[in-house]
Length: 106
Image 1 (tube, rainbow, N blue to C red):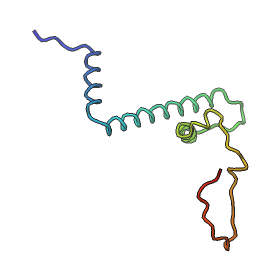
Image 2: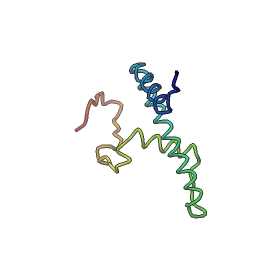
Image 3: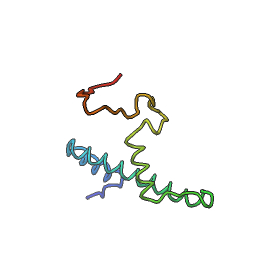
Image 4: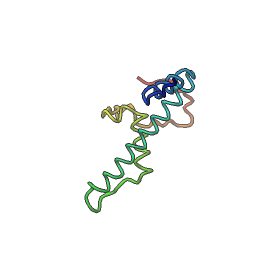
């Protein structure tokens, strides 16, 4: 008698199969899950902005919300409020006659 596998067993088999495909598949899976989370966050921000934002305020489009969510994902410091030192992060300009290579700044 053949027993049909349960949904849990089927999912375990698919998950184990996916894990056995190697590093490239795992990185691709992580990228896919990250994109799903970014699109989900963008949808929440877009819908929430339309419902909760005061009249006349700027509302983010889905594309803008996706971009903001992606940037927050890539730069974890912005999510935690880490700010750079303005004196160190300001743009430096040099005269053309100054033939200097700036390698690093402390």
